[in-house]
Each structure stands twice: as structure tokens, then as C-alpha cells.
Length: 304
Length: 304
Image (cartoon, rainbow over all chains, first blue to last red; front, side, top):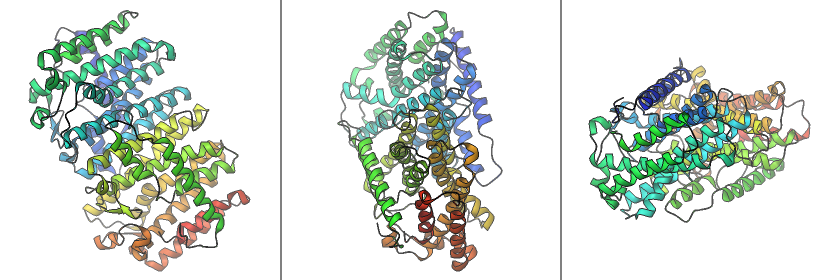
């Protein structure tokens, strides 16, 4: 994939590797059945295989490996969190939600199939996530499995991602003028909760004790906010073809964003400061955390 | 609730008890937050509290207690499977799916709130199910938690309930004439998989070894099919007011059902035979299984 930071080969290699691994894993996990439910699995494959940046699986895998866990465990957990991310995009794109026609440079699922199939394929990917985490492939240790489930479900449910989406919908439909504090809270839920869950899941697989996770959580919090500010900047200034989706929707709706509230220059400065702050939280780690550092930089400089 | 079998006080008491327990548990699990996501939790409460028969939680609780497990564990697991059932009804009722206006005698969620909120509330109940099963409240034993998650996710995903719904949608949209074999397979997925998961979850909480679950699985398989045949009979002959939802939709669409394929009399005879067969599988149990026996009878004689 085209990176803004062309020289950053650690990141380019890391992303290329995780993208291949996640695609291969989904391919193996989703064989098309020879019955009338085939269409459902075809829709799940259409949405889950290819196209995504796979930032969340990379966070899981990198943190897990920093603490000596097996890559295979991390890939299954990475598939689980990516399945949640993908399902949320499918439902978000529906006509009754954001009504988007393009995603990752191709028609959204309800455009390529139909709305009912999109609802069901999203629901099925949602289940797949927990089937993976509850099953034996991700870990032989049931404590690890149960903790992964709890962490992912908390991050994606009404106290996490879905709660943030609800706040976002209310902002759109009622034209509420959210202030910077409220927008920050909204984004911490909508995007930050799942990025936080990714890092936490890596720590669970790596068996990092609770009290040793503070710096990882701080890293996740900072990149989560930086990620969303960068998203708002992309929505304002990005290239639709590179992004593979419609842009400038927020501005057109007059919705409050980090950019509308802070201005482009301050928003960019804030994103970069958060990225540097995130990297600062990794000071106790050596080169095994270089990928997390590169990711923190990539998140604010990406062009899609 | 009004039961057809007025004399069956074991069942009436059992249902009343589980209905109160599940309502109370959801009430405690879903406090309305004091922020902009309040609407989401209000919608979840609207759909989850009150109205349902709670057949699935009763199966979990009855099987778990037959093997000496704590009622509290079973209630949390019962809430989890009921959250899955409720989320599937919310999404099923959406305009792009079955487009239903009434459920449990009140407006469907998207009618009372709006479609976007209905999608998100369904998704959030879906997460709540796994947050409950992954967390400590349901069991101190992480193996039990992980097995519950795996069982519920497998029963509800593309190889279970959602797969059955896909087959159902294809039957509607393409007007395919399914034969009895295909309808049986469809219903085993759409309804049977989750009823099977309920019994299995009870067995997991009751720590019944795998090899001791055969008769419970056979019971679940038979009541699952009986339940769906009875549903088709209700759709054909039932009272809309009692049912609290629109009926005769299948016949209006010319969709193949057990009743259209077998006729009313044979379908009723088949449902009763399955109910008796289900009860036969419980022969090794004493009066501790009376509720399961009463439930098998209720399922085919209910009026809603």
C-alpha cells in the first residue's frame, strides 16, 4: 500500500505482513458452504478480505510479540478485532446510518449485495469475532480467552464504540453543536475504545500483568485521539481516490469536528504532539517497539 | 402471561419466575448513562426488558440447576442468550429485513426510535451478551466462560441462526420453493441452533461432561423443530392480538412452511410427536426435569 512515509520500511513491511496474514486467516476461516447460506459467507468474505489497513491486528500482534507470545495466537485475536471493525463499517455504511456507497475503493456491501445481506453479514462477523476468541485456536489458556472476550466486547459495545456512534448520530440528526470536550469524549468511544482494546488484547496474549499495562494504555489513548484528528484532517483535505471513500461529508453537514473546532493548523499540530507523546510512553522498550513507534507516526501522516 | 395450559402451574410459575429475574437482571445491567449515548441504552432497555417469553433463559437455568449449578450464574448466562435473541428480533424487524411494525404488542424498536438507533441497539445487545459471558459474574471458572462464549457465538453466527436467516431471506426474495428437507435444515439453523445453545450453556454451567450431554442435545433438537412447526401453525391460525405481532405473512408471500408443505393436521401431529419424543429423552431424570417436560408441551400448545 502507498505510504506517505516512503522511507519507513519497518512499517511498510509490518503492514504488508499483517495484511497478508489477516487475509489468509479470514480466507481459511470462511469457506463458502455448499448450501443456501453461501451468499452470507460470500458477503462476509467480500467485506473482510482485502482492503483494510489492519491497524488493529497490527497493534495486537506487535504488543503480543513484544512480550514473547506466539504470532499465531495474535493473528487469531487480530482477526477477531478486525471482524468487529469490519462489521461496524458495514453497519455504519447502511442507508439508515451514514449511507455510503464506497469503502476501500469498492462498492459498500449493501451496494454490492443488498441491505438485508449487509445487516446479516455484519452480525455474522460480529459473532465470528467471539467464536474465535472463545475457541481453542487463539489460546490453550481459558483465562486468556475469557479476558480477550471481555475486553473486546466492552470496547465495542454501548460503553465503547457503539456508544460513540450513537453520540455521532445524535450530533448529525439534531445538529447539536458539540464542543471540544464532547467531541473528544465521542471519539475516545467511537475510535479510541477499539484501538485501546487492540493494545489490551496484545497485552493479555503476552500475559502482561495488569499493573504493567499503564504505559501501553497511555500509548493507545494518545494514538486513538491522534488517529481521529488525522481522520478529520483527511476528511477536510484528503484525496477521495486515495481514501477509497467519500470525503468532506462532515463539513457539508456542518458537523463539529476537531478541524472545525481547532482549525487545520492547530489540529495537525495537536495530532503530531499526541503522536510524539504516544512514542514517549514506549521509552522502557527497545527496538521491539519500533513498529508501534512507526505506527504512531504513520497514523498522523497517512494519506488514507 | 396467559398460557394455553392453564393447569400447568409448574410451567406458569417457572416462566413467571424467569421473566422477573431476566427483567431485573437487564434493569441492573443497563443503567441509563448521563451523557449523549443515553438514547442507545434507552433503546436497549425498550427491547430487552418486558415482553419476551424467555424460553431460552429458562432452558439455561433449568438445565444448570438440574446439575446443581447456582441460579445466579444461570441468570447471567440466560441474559446473554436472551440479548442475542432480542438483538436478532430487532434486526429482523428492520424495513430491509421483515419490515415489522409490532413486536410483543408494542411498536418495534425502529418504529419507536429510528432505524439507526435500532441497528446500533441490536449491535450493542450483541456485545452485551459476550461482555456478560466473558466477565466474572457468570462464573469464576474461565473455562466455563470461554466455553459459553464459543457455544453462543457458534449458535448465533453464520453456521447457526444468521445462516438460517440468510436461507429464509433468499427463500423470500427469490421465491424459491424449498422442500421439506430444506425447510427443516433452515429452521434447525434459524431457531434450533439457539435453542440448542441454550441447553448446551446450561450443561456447561452445570459442568456436565461432553459425553453426558447426548440426551440433552436430542431434547433440544426435538423441541427446536417442534417450536418452529408450532410457530408456522400460529402464523397460519393464531390471534394477532395475543401474538402481539403481524401474522399470516408467510402465507401472504406464498412462502413454503411446514404447514404449507404438510398441511395443518399433519404439522400439528408432527409437532406433538416431536414434543413427546423430546420428553422421552429425559427418561433418566426425575422431577428436577419436570419444567423441561412442561416446556416441551407448552412449546407446541402455546397461543403466542
